[in-house]
Amino acid sequence: MDIIVLIKQTVDMDQIRLNENNEVIAEDLPLKTDVLSKNAIETAVQLKEKYGGKVTGIIFGTEKATSSMKEAYAMGVDDGYIIKGYKKSDPIITSKVLSNKIKEIKNDLIILGNQSSDSYSGLLAGLLASELDMNLLSNAIKIDVDGDNVNVTMEAEKEEITMESKLPAIISVAQEINEPRLPNVMKIMAAGKKNINIEETDVKYENDDKILSDKAPENKRKKIIYEDGNGIDEIAKILKVVK
Amino acid sequence: MRCLIFSDDADNLKEIISYFYKKMDIDVFCNSEVLDYGANNVYKYNDGFSDNISEYLIELYNKNKYDYIFISSTNLGRQIAGILSDKLNEKCMPEIFSFENDYKVVTKRFFYGGKSVLTEETDFKIFTVAPGIYEAKKVDKRSNLIDAKLKNSRYKILSKKKKNTGGNDITKAKVIVSIGRGLGSKENIEKVMPLVDALHGEIAGSRPVCLDYKWLSEDKQVGLSGKKVKPDFYIALGISGQIQHLAGIRNAKTIIAINKDKNAPIFEECDYGIVGDLFTVVPKLVDKLKNN
Image 1 (tube, rainbow over the protein chains, first blue to last red):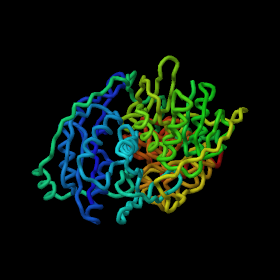
Image 2 (image 1 turned 90 degrees about the vertical axis):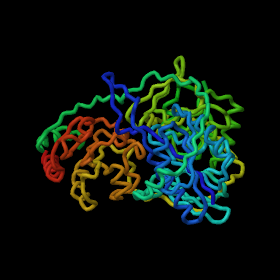
Image 3 (image 1 turned 180 degrees about the horizontal axis):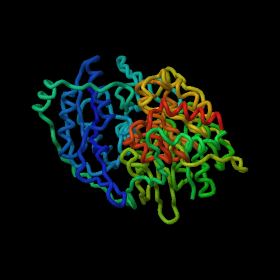
Image 4 (image 1 turned 135 degrees about the vertical axis):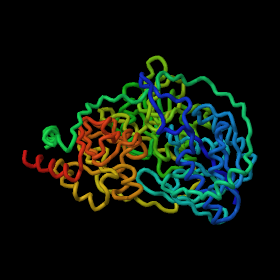
């Protein structure tokens, strides 16, 4: 089975600092593989281990994406493409760039994370499924392949739904689907020597999204803190209205 | 102005209709009979999938020339938003929690996992709406109910399983006592239940507590990827206050935190805080509440 895994690199959001106007300083932040992309890689590699085949990773990112691709190799991805030219979160552009590359690679399954941890948009799977005219299953917590069919259990808001679909299909995964493996040193060393295919795209971003402000959410909390276990009387008084 | 709203979740749908009621004319495409919240027409479908729902929405959009499409951010909603965005070649602004169109469209959404709020001006037509945008309110106006016949889908459901839920809906609770990793073990939940009972509240928890350790069922998870709650009082016990958790409690009126680590970020985002051992503080607090 030929599997493509789509990997996203995001800024390390724990490192975000604010300036004196409470605005996010987004420049020069360290990058890392997005949390759900690791679940997607783990899913793809587990499916390969179970059903055989090959896993190809694709990152639409910058020249800094090699670290994420090496991580994917160490986890078991066989081949990888980095397409440079990513500038900002714009799901339509990301979908166009990725689908162009996907069309060049033989595939039965495309795996990606359900929502990325920066924007939580969750639009990419639908965009790609529509663009590539592929079956779409999202927020998967279990995937079983059976011949030409794939059975996927998806986590919806109030229920778990198991659906049957034909291959090829595009499946986004939830964090609950697995625990991404931690590769050993040997695998990390070997991954560092593997070739990464690097390509360019000259995609044009439109300036149709004017950011009026990008600030930390307002904090109007009172922040009255009692130390050493004090403050029980005061808190009890505040909670009295509940009764 | 006219808009089309899609939602497969009746609660989210009511919130979205109430938010736009009287701001524009509203038609709705949904699988529930939500007829007294102010929509003009309610197109109701049964058992839809991403393919046949998208197809129907595109027909409606082309026929009725809506100015905007609002889609509730559910798992199915996000699939459909992506498909519509591609098929209509219109950009989609995701996860909005505020929408104004006085002169141009200005929306707000969280970015960087809740670390910032992006206020953006666009001419986008499709939006996904985060849960909890507004309080749902019934109105006198009654909507027309129209039966929507969907085409056949390429998908087939093999089975459905109701999620393991622990009773009441925490998004409707007036008082929430929420537990974090600091509680130490599932067995310790009974040590904080007297506080929940004394306040007639609901118990909830952080992501690790609900998803990783499964001390509570998943529907009790508060945060960016869980429920967004709006109680009068949110009492955080042993919760450090990761940014993703805080994004779920921004609409709480009063936040009270009890944590033994005085550097925990929750103390930056609370109204009242006690730095101390929750197993000492909570029983004392319960005593006080009972004796008053």
